[in-house]
Amino acid sequence: MKAIRVKAPGGLDNLQVGEAADPRPGPGEVLVKAAASSLNFHDYLVVTGALPADDGRIPMSDVAGEVVEVGDGVTGFAAGDAVMATFFPLWLSGEPDTASTWGCVPGDTVDGYASEYVCVAETALTRAPAGYSAEEAATLPCAAVTAWRGLFVEGGLKAGDTVLVQGSGGVSIFALQLAKAAGATVIATSSSDAKLERLRELGADHLINYKETPEWGKEVAGLCPRDGVDHVIEVGGPGTLAQSVDACRHGGHISLIGVLTGMAGEVPTATMMMKQLRVKGITVGSREHQQQLVRALESTGIRPVIDRSFPLDEIADAFRHQESQKHFGKICLRY
Image (cartoon, rainbow, N blue to C red; front, side):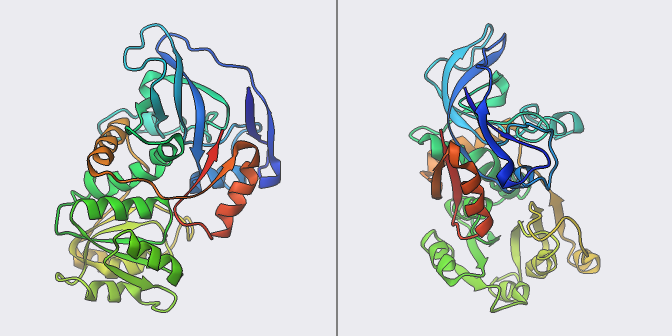
């Protein structure tokens, strides 16, 4: 079968199209004909070498496709089922721990899904939402599950709450869509007026260009009846955290998700304490969270926003498109 591998030390010119042995399912395993994947910032770090992986690693943490064969003992899936993989194949439910979230992420510490067929444990899959294309389903396991967990599992979002989302990447757009479907008010930031207009079309209630308004945290707080938002989906990291803290109401909640502006930086501890904020770092979610998300998407009719799809052979060009930051929503690979 065709497979993409990252040659050490990484870099987009070191993504190589080659072959790998066709997998066969053992007991408890499912063989899936991969149909699509989607790009995440985590994948970009791997393929560029910023997150070092073993020489020859097959990248990509997201995949969706069709079951072609099941091993002995598999009861949850059958040939023909539309499925998608989970980001943490060992974290099934409950609280995360080291054993279930370290050393098992596909495309990072173990081979991922940039190949024509994948063979995984039954518990590393969930069904795809009914009526979704493979490309739509492939956008969900990392970005949408992260947004779901940040808002509903950790944040306890309810109708009437206010939510701040940053930019127009996958997590932020899913957070906007999910929050609006739940009856929340959403404030969105971006450096692009054109992207802000598209966020408005998706339901954003208030828009702020953060280049024109550098102190956007106070601007956000001024739009809220409780002098700040209830929830922040914080994807920027150290470069935006201080503004997010300013944007929060007393007792507000921040899901610290991204590192787009760096891996470390100053933390406004005094303000966080005075406002008695809840700040929690999260990384994607469990299989149970993904199953919850599927039910929510089916009941609300939300569809992913896909910017562009590339053939698997053009994976390097797909990441160059991601690198350009011109995209709006998710970038996909089709197999």
